[in-house]
Length: 413
Length: 171
Figure 1 (cartoon, helix red, strand yellow):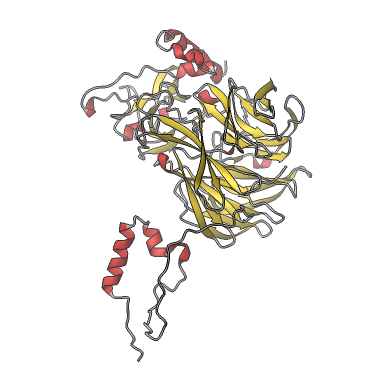
Figure 2 (cartoon, chains in turn brown, green):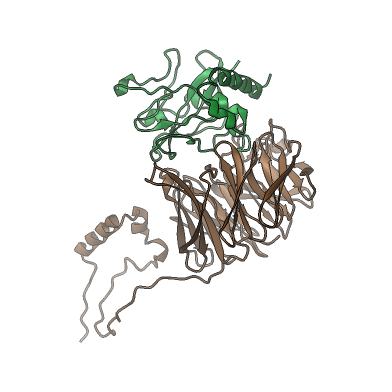
């Protein structure tokens, strides 16, 4: 006999609310149903006793495909208002679902994702008693398949703590070594063998820091007068620094320390006023190959800005820059538009209106890149844009309150 | 003389005056940081005795548009149990930091402001304020506000809030 019964009683509704509170879920999550909301939550369910009974279940742990895919993206939350709770969330753009996350300790910096996409290194700072006590800096290896913390390498407790930016720690192009920028404020570089986990050593770099890779055994550091210096590594990871270049931009219009790599040995820097400066590091000393204005006189009120303000598409040789309308000293302001500058033609080919503000942008790898944006402090969502139409095609929300960097699968140079 | 020159000169003077107390500065990779070391005495007493703005100043130090905050990036200690020049109870000022140059509307003069971080507890979370006048990228760290300056403190290095201490006239 079929017996119908309504299970959405007032008591159950109250219980559901309490459960949401007890589980410390956000009200938004409780009310929206989160990623798994199918739109059926409010539908009346009629019990059907003729259905076969449910079978007992075993608790399981999810594993992933084991290799970071083109559609996978790490979004970092520095947890600015709770800074010891840094985190990186892994999402899948195809399904628009969260796949997992990493906890990163104090002032979470971007991840070092292996070139093969099968593993990553996470640099973290911890204090023995949470916010105080002895500091430990540790590089932890994670396999992409299970996101479990694995091998640890304790490194000198000097790594730079800063608003997260990609250049604070990088892998060499072959993934053999991890190169970490230190700031105490004396500056130095720590090198560890990313394959074996052994610490190679610390190398003084007075007045210079950050890491811009330019090959398997070479990287650049950025010096306090605005010059760049090439570091060469031995096969065992020992670092030797070359001569510093002349400043690549005047301090009256400094370049951002958030450049984009445009070839194996060259990077493009964007200045506060919008100059695009290409630096060639194929020789012994970096040289400015070309400097071109992104902003014309007619658009002189526009400025680049943000936390991760630029991205590069190799297939089209185009640089994407997050732009806003603002005056002097707005170089970290969020952008409302993305300007697309064709490096071959030397001209702007597209101005994309985001329809919202953003502080960081990235492009997905592969032949048909999508534009990704996040907005520090004001949005918990990763937004996805189709470049051909210039329109937003989706978003993934509830990723964090102070989203800082976006990292896609590394591309080989 | 450019503003940066004036800041550098001012910092050099301050460093010379304080060398005996701060010999560790010799280890720094950039000399300019020496200037960012104001004397930050421990204040003892009731909350209402905490040192705040000087009498001739105007404005609300709990507001982000207060003149001293022209290059600050963080939570205002004035909203967190401290003041523009005093760390909240149980936190410790960073001995080194970045500096900015701000114009005091009350007297029309420009002053070098030291934005020492207070450290040892989690972020205060109140009165977040980001202004970037003359802020430089972090490769020029002495005038960059993106860095966590909770370095070399005794009670721990987690960032709590930021001060805005007058070091002196900029010229």
